[in-house]
Length: 225
Ligand code: NI
Ligand code: MN
Image 1 (cartoon, rainbow, N blue to C red):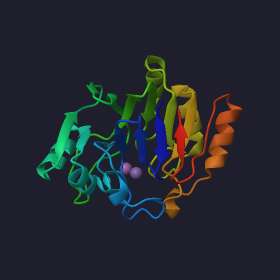
Image 2 (cartoon, rainbow, N blue to C red):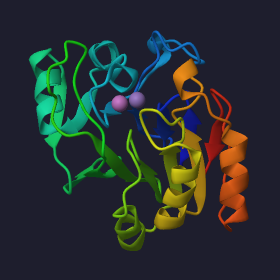
Image 3 (cartoon, protein in one colour):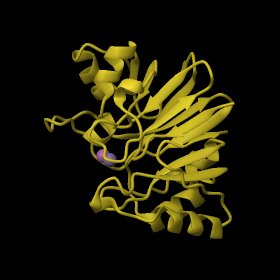
């Protein structure tokens, strides 16, 4: 059994009852965040890329919880230079952690920290935990290799950006769901800021019309998978 909690934007907590993993913990400065960073208890932090709306409270959470940050090499080194434990990985590679397996995928985007220093390639991430497989696409445009990702992996939940401007908009994300063919598609990265306003229910309706399942999560909502 796996619990998936949506913290708004691209942030999630995965909880198998024993381990908590937080993805892209943008909480402080996030107007839609339902909790404060102080409330997070996660031994592992997975980052898709270094942009502030994904890196977020990584250092604060890691310092407080002694967390290990899992990221591509350049970003993981940056985290380590800031005194936090890291596990360096890269795109295409998988590793078995005590909580489950993490594999990084490509994403078409950028990755720089708040000082505009290059932090390696941006990524998506496939996490297998508690008997479920979650594909978090990170920030990305649509790419046809999502079809390959869907063929190689039995994806239970696909977390896909829909906010447009920086990432896929609704129609490209609907196509991405066709490619990945998950059991459930959940929209992310929308309505946090005016420039990424999008209607998640329009996305969900279009996904359902194509024969897939979709769920729009409220900020702070937890679902059991
Ligand atoms: Ni980004
Ligand atoms: Mn972003």
